[in-house]
Length: 333
Length: 244
Image 1 (cartoon, rainbow over the protein chains, first blue to last red):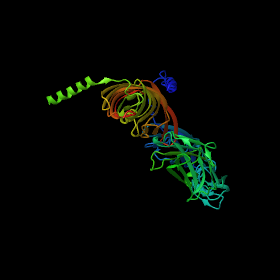
Image 2 (cartoon, each protein chain N blue to C red; image 1 turned 30 degrees about the horizontal axis):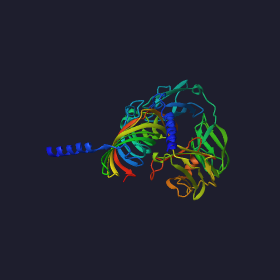
Image 3 (cartoon, each protein chain N blue to C red; image 1 turned 90 degrees about the vertical axis):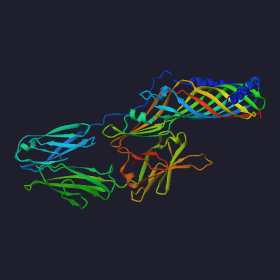
């Protein structure tokens, strides 16, 4: 009994030692209240769409933080205005024009100006040019490509995508079905019949066959705190691996390779419409009992393809049986 | 009515007259008390400002087992589950949220050891016993916050969704309780007591997930730091072992 009493005294001493931290200042809840950012014009440019007067000019803008009711007001420098997103304005007379764009919403506004010196000239050279971007975050076949026409001095266009397809739109989009290197040609014509050529190569990669899971962040409801949680992963019906068992505290982070056993990649991925990627969230009940099912999150092929680290990471919030489950998935190819 | 009171008063006086202290009456016995009641958080926890916890009073359920060694002195263990309500309306207002969802409460679970001194008053041997006791507790305590989701209009706040989630928090605590137990037939009784967790400040860690209007996510970690003492009136049942 004396021994027990001695143990009790030792225990009490330890508790007294860790019992409180009186020195630290009071600290309440961190609140996250910040004014939302006003619109910000990142880019403003124009394209003169003829080589001889009268000059039609199309103005383009790239603005960030577009929330609420956004209005665009263009001042063309000749007393006229427009509220279009990317307006085309025809200048009847040659001269020097300074064009201003004002973007407004309920939070604030931003403005930018641009000079258009070419409008002072009797004629301007035709320069054929374009840029492009992939619709998805990747260039895996099949891939949709969006072209931006940056040609000046022209208003009629002929596109050859290098895969046997042609188009006459100003700014076409095109789907390249197969992997390969495509030479995309643009011929830009002025109204007087003169033209200019420009070409660029576009690389379309084969479908990746292996998708790596870099990390998984799992957030569970509070009642799972302190419990032993793990995730099993399946590609269609094939088991590919599972995470190690971790104690549930928000958020539970699994990083490859150390937090995964058996495997951490989906192999032979085909990106077909009936392909599924399944994450089964389980609670470990020890070696003698079956694990308890908590939730199952199923992603379609398109989700895996279009959202991947680092541009975007995938967040899923499934519906019951257990509410309040989030999974952040970090993938790479 | 007067007669009833008179009879009751005389009976009680008679009981006290015949009652006698027997400090060794409970020696070598064990007893279990199961209690519940209202738990009162302190004013610092209740405060609804930048350093407060927005807590409200709550409830608890407790289990306490003691073994009496000698002269009414004993040692034991206790587990108490405390739940403090969260003043969600005040918090949402303070956080200027347009909408909110709160699940759960402040949850504290205490595991502790006791030293206890009992003063048994035997009114009728083997029939009725009144025990006055004082108990000191020390142990470990887990503490968690409710799951809080705040929603904002994209025109009012950069962050349209703010999620607060608890992390594992363990701390020490010291407390005491004192009260009365009325025991019949040396086995079953009722317990009325006062319990207090001593005043000390602790840190409670939590995680935050911030989502802006463009679905960009940020994750952060922070902590609350405040006094976590509490008081409660305990009512419950009492089982005496080893005497019956």
